[in-house]
Image (cartoon, rainbow, N blue to C red):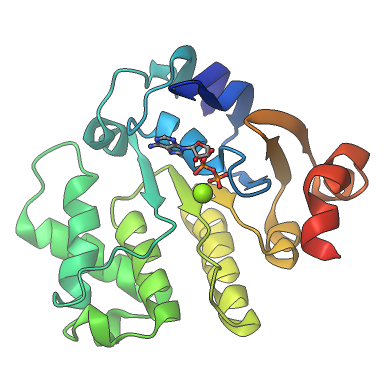
Length: 241
Ligand SMILES: Nc1ncnc2c1ncn2[C@@H]1O[C@H](COP(=O)(O)OP(=O)(O)O)[C@@H](O)[C@H]1O
Ligand SMILES: [Mg+2]
């Protein structure tokens, strides 16, 4: 579905993403891990048109993404959530979800259609009965579920999730993990998930990609990643010690 080849992104002299190849298949949940500054968010930005790479190719269902704007990438079926929660806190929960439905749609969607998609996505994350409340009144965990609803309201084929678990309790992280798993199981969405919380990422991913200083150092099943000496040295030793 998503295929990246020889992707390099430099900021001045800094090579944030260094000649990275990877792919994401249909209905796959793939983790992206690595130390802070490894290039994980930048890799998402190369996919979504925010920071086009200096070199390389990224195709989605055969269409080249490089040169497309973030809006065009969204319309092709790739949604994302951000490391920092981006809800509009003075808008209602429903209006926040509708932003996703409108931004990610290729034809000019009617207000009724956008409302239907937004409410359906809110119901999926358990927030439809709170649709008329201000988003700012939700707990952090619910605002993160709202971010997922906003992404899912676009009816994407792939969702990129950037560190959604940070600051949540173990129970809340488990709920987010289950939402992502259900998105795959019930809606056929592929998930590419940056996360530092190893228990969550190991429990649900089919495969994990590891970045270190911009380079891909491993790509395998959670079990393979756990027993990879390079990964332990660069990252897992640090987060799990
Ligand atoms: N917009 C930017 N301008 C300059 N440097 C950046 C920019 N975004 C990220 N970087 C640098 O690129 C490297 C990778 O950052 P990032 O992708 O945010 O890492 P991660 O998400 O893995 O923590 C870091 O050294 C960071 O400082
Ligand atoms: Mg990041």
